[in-house]
Amino acid sequence: MAAIDALAIKKENLKKGIIANLDLLMGTIVRAPSHSGYYLTDKREGKTITKYIRKSVLHRADEMTNNNKQLKKMARQLSEINWQLLQHGAM
Image (tube, rainbow, N blue to C red; front, side, top):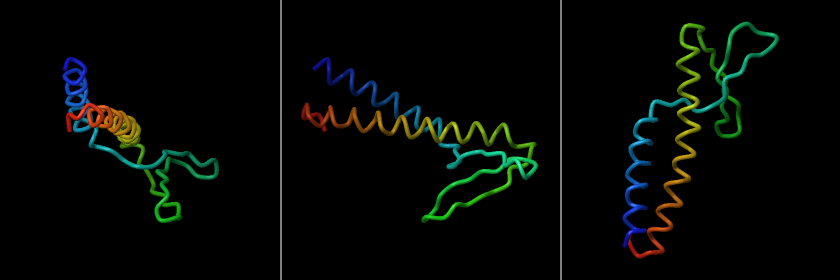
């Protein structure tokens, strides 16, 4: 039972972390040598989408792309915890 309780606590902490990281941007911030400024690039339906990032919001955009990376990591951890809980019959 202690293992299930520990997993349940980890799951709740991860859910809180996921909620805290929902201000996100999907994509990668790049600086093209031939252009001035920064761009957010992302693949959608096989096509690269590029959006210009104003210098005044660059720092926040960087934080938001990092939130996306953290969210992906936490989703994978949550999936593993859910699998363990399922194996213990707790779900």
